[in-house]
Image (cartoon, rainbow, N blue to C red; front, side):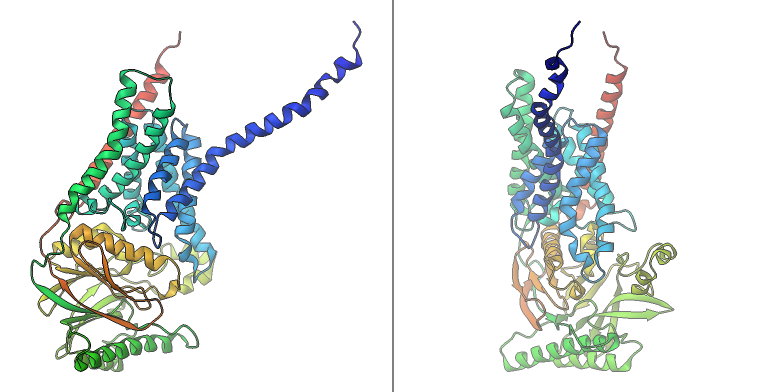
Length: 536
């Protein structure tokens, strides 16, 4: 047999034409990964300070597309990419003062929860009515992330991106879990409608039933949200109160630590006295009570007579009870404390923050972290201790529930104040260390959701902004700028009735978690049966 030059050279002649095909195939395999990451970014864009809440729906529609029918390894990777796309920009503020290391570590850990949710969504995506099961799995993932590790980190719950959306009234029906579930369900339902519309291979009863479920996934949350608007009311059930919110501002440059703490206290005293002068002049209404932010007195007024003196002076000038955010040492322990200061009696009630912030107010695994980087342990020299009791101050004729800063992200912390009798909620905060980042707007959106969830006026006094007064329907009626000294005075409704969300507490979330568990159990069982089925 004679081998010709042509036959020997044939493979080399084919290689240039097959190479672009191979490269194209490799690029196509990257499309789901890119789509997962970009849909996570799309979800981030739906969050405040932007009002593009509706972008959450296409974000979850794309996530449903990339996860449907995947194996667990691919689903884990795609879910992780979605989590990174969402959380990296959302939480960038956590590195403003401490650098990118803690920010990246936090995101890397939190994205694991999203990756595990991705595995669950992929598993239930083969079931009938899969958008329902998948939305429940997402909500179960949020429930886990709100509790672990180190007490949980609920920041980025889907509900917190919906303060301007049509679904917001659902917060009054079943709290943040029901609100978030509805949004995610709509997103997955949107993808299912598109998928069925483009899939001409299936027909008959199965297709019709799948289409009905997809349409209901969109329609039921919207109808429920419209119906829940009857739960939202600004009516004053227990009369009204005139509240004053003080934002004293902070010095940003030129002062060492102890001097800056005293300056912050003096700024809040000064702004309160300025408001008192306006009240005396008749240009501002006289408040029934005054609310200062968290850390407005980092000098312990129980241990420092000069701090107590200037706080008392401010309370007497305005002629109303004053809630002060202080750092207090007691029995060798440190507390982030709200102090009720009466103009005549001085301090009368206190509330110790119960949900303290890991790595900000206390350092978990201190010895391990110190071995890695001793500079990190120096940032939290002494851990704050946790309070144990709800904080409801009797201020004039109103009962004011205190939810200090980070606590506003936790369902239980806000609800406990309402069930303990709060007619109004105050969220004193200190966002000064996060500069002009989106953090303050994200937290403000949480307070708007809480207002609707429990049908209470919510005040947000912040050291450096944005301070605000929020009505029970979630609308902001007054707010300050950032890094300015200002005060807000307004007559607000006092309410004592409880929404279904307040009454039910954790039950809606647990019900959704059970639905997720049922879907996962069904999917796992179906997979096991399929593997055991004999092949012909």
